[in-house]
Image: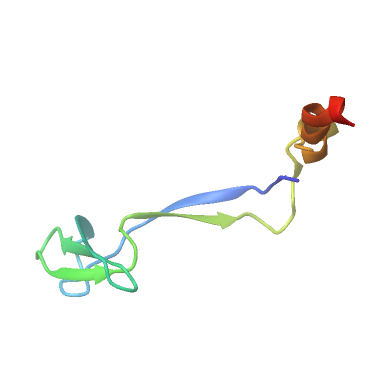
Length: 93
């Protein structure tokens, strides 16, 4: 059953460790090692850094721990694999 939870959305940027002013921007270059690293360049001092995620990144934070509830309370809207089986093999029983 699906449950809904209210969340806040955040855009997380990374400030350059070198100059402390610029924002690290993804260059599109990926190092395919384990773990993967994404190349970023500062938009002020042009310093290069590698991160495990592409910045800016979208993150979500739950608002409270309460579940709002199921998306639907109508039982017919939920997938029931036995009903598919009955439809396919009804005549063979």
